[in-house]
Image 1 (cartoon, rainbow, N blue to C red):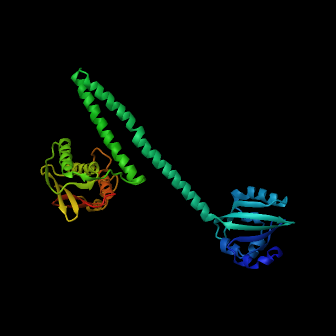
Image 2: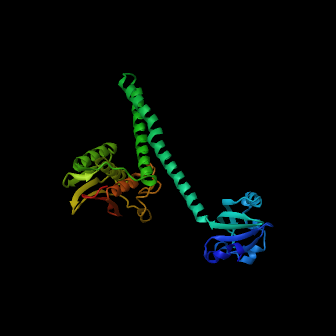
Image 3: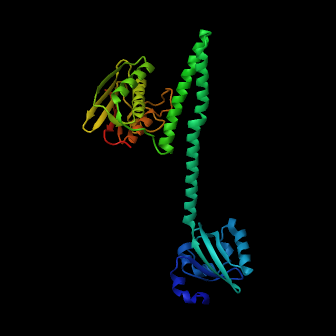
Length: 351
């Protein structure tokens, strides 16, 4: 044990910090047991080589400059570099070194985990900024030009003129509507997957009977070749976000109309079961393949492989996220008799 550490004998042997006495020739003439615990080197191995031989190549130049400062009689504090472990990896160390004549008393703390934590934090902060920018682009930069196109289309439609122009204007308006719906889906996906989750505006007096009837009528207009039937038997009001429930049911009905057998009706059933409101959407047709059933509520998934329907494959995912936001759940049953999506909504628990 070096003389200058003699009165700290217990510290020299017990401290987790790397301690050493560095000579003017660039070799350690004394090292404590922490060298082995932190870096895997025995004292004789460390003391046999120039200390710079253990330093990461990218850190050698500035470590040599720090050694020159020590040699000029000035201390070096909180100096960070990477030291080679016996296994070939490198550990980050933070050094404090004080000169005493032609010897330098050094202590170092292993800060590898601190460095990793800081890097992870920086990555998370960058990811958070990306999420915010991504959501902002969807919510603002894409919506603004669509709003301008839609406004211009409405103005042109008010003016009398060539009927062909009106047909073109109607086509533009329909395209804007589809694009707006896609942006809405992407916004919901971004909030659910990248942000804080689907946003709710919950009301304790939501009249879901009217909501379901209206949603069914809208879907009927959008899918004129599909027959729809309903059996709604439950008590209003319900604690829920009625607009989100409409979106959920609309997604389920559209999915059923798209993938079902249009020779038989799509059925919307809602009833009270215990403390839950249970809403089901049934359709006939081919069952969902077993290998796809488990991931049917995953984003960019569909109930059929290689479907060419307009959309992003987010409808069922968003329906599931809306159900979760209401502390409810989505289920699916599918066999040769048809497919049924089931939404269970607790009457007493929405966030």
